[in-house]
Image 1 (tube, rainbow, N blue to C red):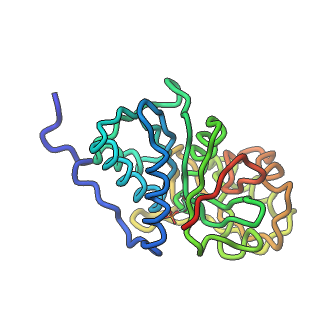
Image 2 (image 1 turned 120 degrees about the horizontal axis):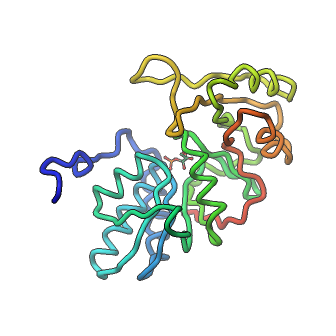
Length: 232
Ligand code: 5RP
């Protein structure tokens, strides 16, 4: 039986998509990598959403059978609305994974997590042998932290301890991310808070250093990962 009014059927992307032309180009490049019988890990963000639309079109036209593992509710709703078959990491390992990014440095290190989904994004990326990061040209930076702060997902109970521990690093600001259509802080899909941190300089050990603080679930720093960058 199916729901008469499935809320996902009317899913639309909530915000304007910046640099849409460039994002459409990389979205099409990702769709070309899709083949029959693959299970694909799906990141989050507007570039990923555009890629999903191209993937769904290809699946329909070529009558492919694929399964997807989404990293956020936003992308899960998009997958449902586009008629893609969803599976989970408990059931399957992705053949490959793709995602967007907020910043990419010349060594392919990343800042991600504007959408707050960095824990599942990192989990999927680690779980997959082949990873593609799709970015428009505005995402390329000489040094991480030029444009974006580093988001850090923290268990609410540990927020002061994590804040105290981060303060010992080379910090400029630490902000608790606040919600816009809800009172109080943003609550992640794992029920946690997000601290957005501006560092003076992001060192190569920072992802590990931050992860070692008790109470940190994941940060948006992705340093030394096995990824291929796809640009326009
Ligand atoms: C979400 C992310 C996104 O991949 C990143 O913010 C890029 O988003 P967009 O494609 O909308 O520019 O990390 O957590």
